[in-house]
Length: 166
Image 1 (tube, rainbow, N blue to C red):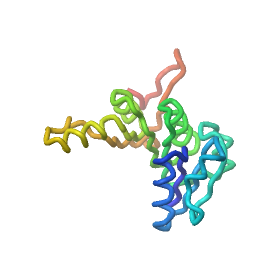
Image 2 (cartoon, rainbow, N blue to C red; image 1 turned 120 degrees about the vertical axis):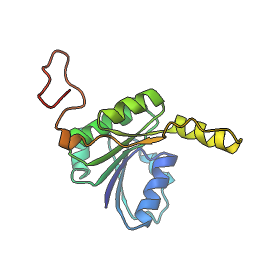
Image 3 (tube, rainbow, N blue to C red; image 1 turned 60 degrees about the horizontal axis):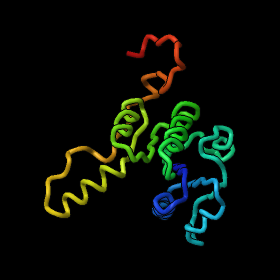
């Protein structure tokens, strides 16, 4: 499986290491070269300094044709922007963005972007750890099949809806 990860923070670096170690073809992208210091010298994937929200940069990093795209930076907006480019412009079928706001996580999942909500994940884990009932809200939401639906995630204000939107 070809995987592209945006953000070489603690989470991105760990996932990149684990997936590359499992034999997957991994490219991790970050705007800061120093972020790649988190990767072990034995990392078998590719590390690319680029802006993960820039379509041309993603194409140069050969993200097009990837099987999985994970946007794992610290910024919700940056993650959503990168995921939108991956889904709409590059046609990557499985796209997930880390989002801290549970309401936004649900909204973006309904628009086609899979989301990982760290807030819900931590709340549920803590509630379980202290013997309380978890929220019942999922931490990971798969986006609807955006490619099959054929609708853009965002339509410019005033633009007409297509026959498939509803």
